[in-house]
Length: 319
Length: 319
Image 1 (cartoon, helix red, strand yellow):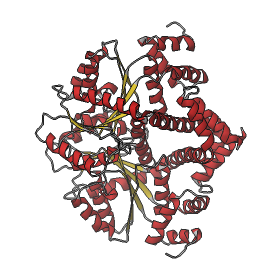
Image 2 (cartoon, rainbow over the protein chains, first blue to last red):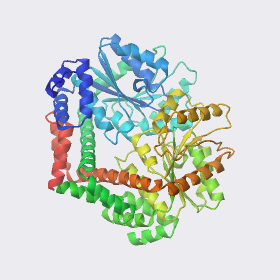
Image 3 (spheres, rainbow over the protein chains, first blue to last red):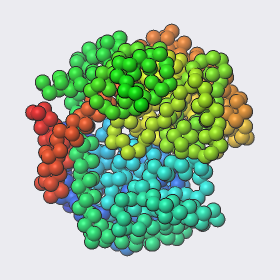
Image 4 (cartoon, rainbow over the protein chains, first blue to last red):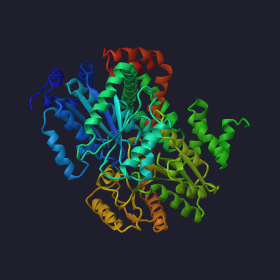
């Protein structure tokens, strides 16, 4: 492997070269100062892509939908980046062989770039890492970036909320206990999709969702009536409608000025998450001894975790 | 409502009075210095309860299992605290009427205290809030504290990992795409439960789990062979075995000295989470103007989120 400078790596990203994109993504995970400087440069060049968050409970069929969306967008000549933050996604290697084979037909296309994010093991940092990847795909010129997350879990919902357009996928017949979780993500949807509409019980799910929306559930942006779209990714029914609907929403954001509100809200969330990450890193790296001594006292219940945390932060301010 | 001092509130908690416990839980959510001082006192008196984390994907039947566990523990005279960090839990009001009715039969018992945690809306702080509630139940003398979380989402898995014993619940026949998520929580299980074992396909799920465990998946504590227990919460099959197994695990932790390792690891996680929360609060409260100015620049892409976060933290150190 030849040695590439961070500046060269950024140039490769801006030129849209797949190897450069991959290496920049891995480089950004390293968190070093040089990596951060390179990502600042990448961020400066991002801002053109339309970022679409796609979420739903496990089994809702969102991965299949993401694939169908990507193929339809490609057929119309648009380039697509895919970020999978979902351990059950075929993009993350979590699903059955059939899905992987279908996914591979996308992977051979230079107009598509797929990156899966590990959701386990990383202590914090998942949101920041996801946003780095989105920025890289954006700066590399991908016109639409699809971010797939599982619709449960605070971090995962935070990540999908940082998209310009949020699509929430529901499947018919998943059972009350699973559907109940949807209540938590109902209010973040700009577009509702009911998947698997080749099934006879899908019509009821569409009616149920429309009923919930008419009762006042939904986003605060009252000038955008949240649509409920039936789709069947298997035979591509409704996918073109979904693309048109996402484009309509982008147009609405631009026309209404809501895009500025969202960009600001997304950046605020990113800045606060980044600050938490930086503090976490500094504490673990710089405060090893102090943390260990505080742990000794906390184990004996001489100090509680909150006071120990405050003490640790004092140490950070002094250093 | 009579005015109660924080000291009186702590005394009420230590005396195990339900109204005092409720009020302390609400008071702790307020985050003020007096609330923190009261929680420090509560923490000093905690440490006797056995904390059991129970997790599984939506539809795995973990809520029903938690209820069956609580009833079996009560029948043997033990007191039980329940903390539900799961939007689909009947304890959180997320599930169907039948579950709520069954749950209410527990709620009338003074030997049971149930608290559900909101998982939406709170910007961070879910882990800390959950641990406060566990400490309060512990200090109030509840002998076993059951913490139910959905087994997806980084925060939720972090919360359940902070238990002494982690139970992962799987249901037969949930489908490959749902089961795949289990891979992420497989390694945190001290005990595997297969629910709904009145169903014919349950035996296959038991065999599959045992197969995965024999391939080396599982916790780092190699001196505890992770069991796979079939249960049927509906007709209470296997629930007494599960209680015995949890007790065995507690005994193992004490005998092997692993309990000290876990207590330390749990406290480390709590301290680092608390530090992140404190920083988040300070940033939002003290840095409003600076954050707003940085956001103006970030929107124009003159500064990237990471550099803005570092700047914000510098401001915090100076203040």
